[in-house]
Image 1 (cartoon, helix red, strand yellow):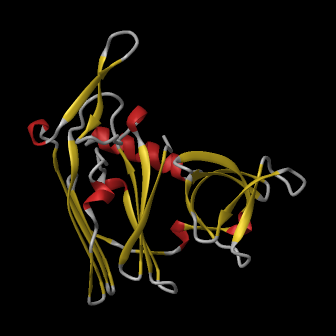
Image 2 (tube, helix red, strand yellow; image 1 turned 90 degrees about the horizontal axis):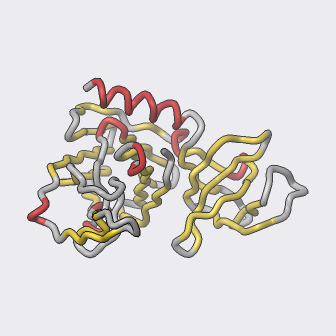
Length: 230
């Protein structure tokens, strides 16, 4: 428990500066600039509704990460164009342990459990580094998140989401390559105006640490975003 507490304190400190946001711009997109300032060169554009990961601010400008063609890019966006995920309605934690958690508020319920990772239940492919060291390269044929070369110890098990009378399905592809989940570092937010649910988590720790966001629009899973906040 002392270890979990230390991880939580570290994550809380990082989240004070780094967090998920969503682009909100009536023009349908906003410009990404190379530096903090209206005079800086436009490097790219991000679409309205796109999920980004924000770092420190420089004046009125946010340093962000965003996805482009399976790569993580960075740049600066004016803070008025980003709605921070944690400013939406936060769904309260009702039960929580090291292995599972229940969130519930009004018509929204989110529950998930985790389980031990059992190597014999998976196809684990090992690679070798240039120095000749063996490492875990793929699990079940996929790249994976949560470990830096070693085997994971835990994985997601069940996910249950209810919004009103709608049972929301979390597809296997959304969670199957994600390991070392942290129920204690998971939060749920609901954008009632747009009927959009967000689940965010800081999973694993150290070199294997990652930040993940799941998004559900009108009761349907639509996307996930993964960044490296550690």
